[in-house]
Image (tube, rainbow, N blue to C red; front, side):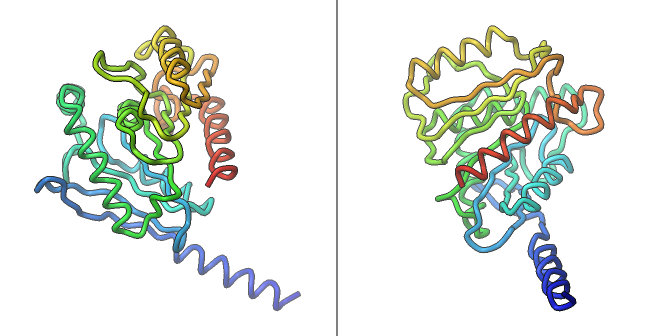
Length: 244
């Protein structure tokens, strides 16, 4: 019994040591960015995380560590630039607006993040991408680009499809977790996305949560909705376990 306990303690210690993350500098098109990578071990499945409109913060780092504890490596991309972490609403709108108006740049930055994840040892052949709010909209942009990932998961993300785009190139599954009390992203937009995905023959699961507002997964905020956060995370991680 003592030997078993010693072995278990050794394995736990090894796992904790292995799952230490760090910020990583990288460049896309000559511009500097800073992501966050945490490895759960060689060739483990990879989850790529796309941040909200305040940039890569402790929130994405916490989610990355939650995933590592479950046995997944994680890489949080940076779409704004190294050190660019806006705190004022006007600046957040400006930065996201620039990317919404230049979809080619958004796609290039997302692809650059994927390549950095691979360079750090992330397994892109067995990976999914998730995004929160603005990041959810970016995830759907990546899906429409034809990126070869197993799934694209949006938590309370923007759901509208640009007029000149469609979902015909999507290669992975799409999951959408949405609060039915969200006033920023309407249920009409939710329904239209479902119609677009169905018309394109894309496998999708779209779930709404009663009473959950926009940004319902953000810990400690006035918008946090524990029930919706817990249930969406459970469905998401069950999908990871079944798929990766």
